[in-house]
Amino acid sequence: MALTHEQHEVIGKWERRWLALSGLVSLTFVIFIAYNLAVEGAHIAQTTGRTQPEILLNAGSFANPSVSKISNDNFQVTGVAQMYSFLPSEIVVPVETNVEFFLTSRDVIHGYQIERTPVNVELVPGEVAYLNYSFHETGDYRLTCNQYCGLGHQNMLGTITVLSKEDFAAREAAENAALAEKEAAAARGELVVDVSAARGEGIYANVCAACHQTNGQGLTGAFPPQVGHTPELYNAVGGRDYLVNVVLYGLQGQIDVSGQGYNGMMVAQGQLDDEEIAAVLNYVLSAWDNDALVEDFQAYSPEDVAAQRGQGLSGTDVLEQRQALEF
Ligand code: CUA
Image (cartoon, rainbow, N blue to C red; front, side):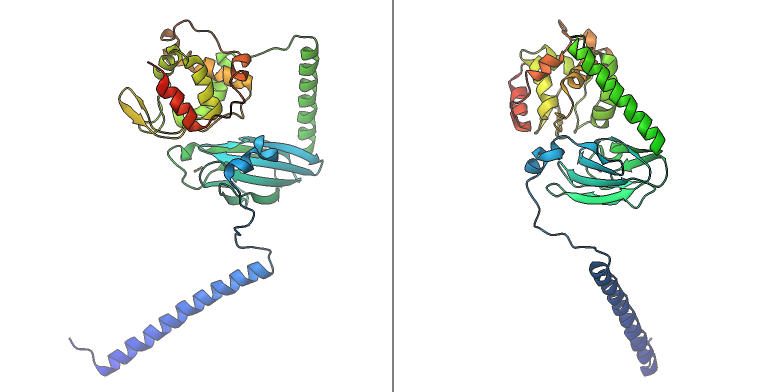
């Protein structure tokens, strides 16, 4: 059916209206962005101030991600996101206090979203995201990664606990007392070292389970199983030290376990202290009936871990060590 001249005119009129409308919408967005830049202090990402992720991670407080108290009204969080955890993963601050966040990523782009607050930033490797926020209500706030960052993304979680000023002061006092007690015990030569599998279980749940899974079965194609396989590595000549190095320095590159390839990157977990690494290895080698497979098990001590630190190995160096093992 052919359109009449009048019908063509009507169509043309509506097309011009829609074009004008979409132009107007775009113009409105430009005005909002310009207003934000000029008045609200927003800014467009700059290439200056970027650096190599490794340089950033070894510098200053990023080498030891933590929460520090600057004054009673001012706290500072230096946080690092990595596949698939936040460091620190548990943050405790008092209510109605200015909390400054300095955040970066170790590997790929992650999100840093604190639920029930406007805090939602993207963490880019080699860049520091800065923000400050004051929590107005006590309670637990969930910290989530909202950028898909790989197979363990959905397990990338943290907690921010906001306490009343009184509760926070009480917690601080208890912590200081515990620390003083520990120092006194050390001075008396009675420091209690806990590298038990029971302690390691909690560390495994927080640090390792996101990839290797709570049941130790790993994820096919990405993260190798701990069940059955870790004892094989332990039993190999040099395997006992190798396992410490995997935790300290990570592992990069494809590996094979019983004919199945795995190529998920193992992130270095050197932020764990010697006792924690010993405890988690003792757990992995005893859990899921692994203990039945380990020959001549000697529980790891903090000294075993300390002996492997400071070698500055890369994930590919560790891969080479693994390839040299016979199992
Ligand atoms: Cu990190 Cu998703």
